Length: 327
Image (cartoon, rainbow, N blue to C red; front, side):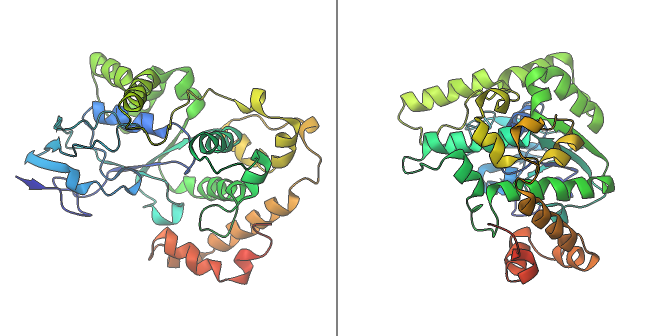
C-alpha cells in the first residue's frame, strides 16, 4: 500500500481526457461528482493538491483519507475513508487552463455557462461571501482579474475565443450548464456516450441523486449548522438568470462583446435595445488582437513549454499584450 505519487497517477499512465471550463461558476463540479459516483477517478481536480489524500489499497482500489473533507461543498463524494474501485480505462483531468497547455489530440469536454450568467453568478457569490466587497456589477466586470493584466470581462472573452479557435484540434463535446439544469440525466448520458463509458441505469440514477443540487445544499446547510461554513458556493443558479436579473445598466455594460461566443455556444445574442453599437468596441478589438498574438505559431510553441501562469507573466511585459487592455 502507498500514497498516490505527485504528478504521476499510480495505475494510470496519464490522464485519458480533459474536462475544461472557465474559472467562473458554471456547474462543472456536478459532472466531476457524477464521475466519482461512477467510480471514475478525479485526480487533482482544478489542480488542487490532493495527491496525498488518497491511499492505494490495491490496483485501482483507493481510499480517500482527508478527515477534514475540504472538497465536500463541491465534491460530496469525497467522504472520509470512503473506498473507490476505480475504472481502469478512464482518468479525466478537470482544469480551468488555457488551450496552450492541453494536449490537442486528447478527447475534450468543454463545460460552459452563458457568459452573462457566469459573470453575474461570480459577482453575486462574492457579494455574499466578502463583507468588504461592495463593487457594483458594472465596476466588477471591469475590475482586474486577479493578478492578470485584464479585467473579468476580458478574461472570459479571451478564454472563450481561444478555446473556440483550438476546439477543432480535439475530439470534443460542448456541455452547457443550461442543458444540465434542464435535463441532468440526458446530459450525463450524452457525456458517457461520447466517452464510450458504459454504466448501468441504477448506477446513473445513484450518480445523479448524489450529485444533485439538493444534496450539495444539504451538505452546506449541515456545515453551517456545525459552524464549519466559511463561504457558501451554491445558490441554486438557474438557466439564463441574466434575462430577469440584469438591469439596463448591466446589459449596457457588456454590450455586444460576447455575441460571437454566444452564437458559437448556441446562446441568443443581445437585442439591439440592450446596447449601443459602439459600446465596448475597444474591449472587443483588444481581445481580438490578443487572440491573434497568442495564437501565432511562435507563441503557441513557447507556451506549450511552460505553465499558463508563467506564459501570461511573460506576456504581461509585452507592450502589445497590454495595449488597450484593462481600461
